[in-house]
Length: 180
DNA sequence: GGGACGATGTAT
DNA sequence: TACATCGTCCCT
Image: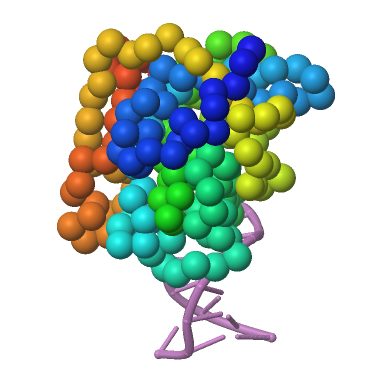
């Protein structure tokens, strides 16, 4: 399986959020590939976006978001769930919220939800800052999405008018999109 | 040093 | 609708 070029993420963040739909997220654990087809994403536009972690300032945690595009930003929420993002640069990133399990998922492991997919694919802060065009964690070409749905982002009600922006994108035909 | 607060998931 | 659970951020 051939990784997408790192430059895939070096575009407008909304464009990347849409282009990621249908592509594959691959994590090799102990030489075994876990493959999910991305069916739900959210765009976090940068320091001016009050829902974006980088809006709280440039800190050790968010530093990778200010680096070059095409790297993984992984964080822990609620003390127990990891979330994985594709950095697009300038403090912006795309959160992967759901994948369709294709390969290497354990029995009963699910991909619907940002915390579920990282758990199922073995992604933790150990993968923070990894380039997404090299093993063990990378993006690859998948089957394109025929209809893209759009909505406000999930769980960012604190962000004022930014909470209402339509920055969540999903495969309208996929049963693996999260409930939100 | 300490307290408030999550880009969630699951059980009640 | 309650709550588990802990890293991060800022000291309100």
